[in-house]
Length: 242
Image (cartoon, rainbow, N blue to C red; front, side):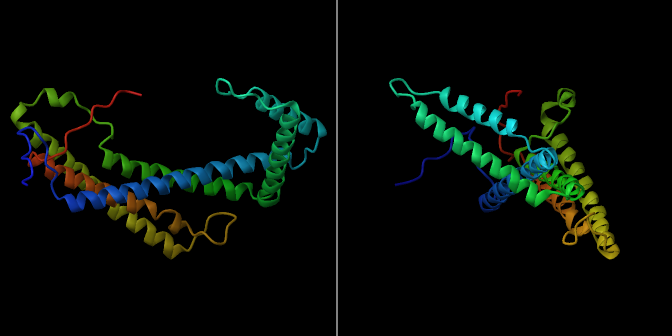
């Protein structure tokens, strides 16, 4: 049984093995970016709790928290025909939730008290990682902001060439930034500077994401320049503004 031939307007992927590898690499970036962002959010939130409740220990806070938990349990959405929990069950769940939250606050105080400077520095480092990983992912998704007014000025027959040249120039810029960032990392390693209030994270290690991101963007922009120039680029998805 023979495979049906693709229609004249159908897009045929080029270099499917490389595209598949890039796709899995992109998924790895998404997971890493999500985990770094989650850890950053938890670290900053824990720091806020630690600073707020290190010197404040009031029973009124416990009472207010319990009331909030009880209201949340009693007003939760239920399906049609599903009975609400009784007051006894609601009180037990609210008390358990209150105890868990209080335990989390004490854990945050125990782990993070006195480390506000370190947390600020780590949060900045993780913000850089999230931003540059996001830039690399945006290159894969082809969702970087671009000025499309020029596309209306060029003849239709030359449009793919113009786009290919633009992507090639962007790739060259990313490659230059890659060389500069490698020099930055090497110089920071020679200096041996560490993140303030930490003895386990060097500054050059925090900057490792910079050459990685520019290298990944350089390769992806170059690949997109080749596919655009040969008219084998994947059709752009229609995206509604958010």
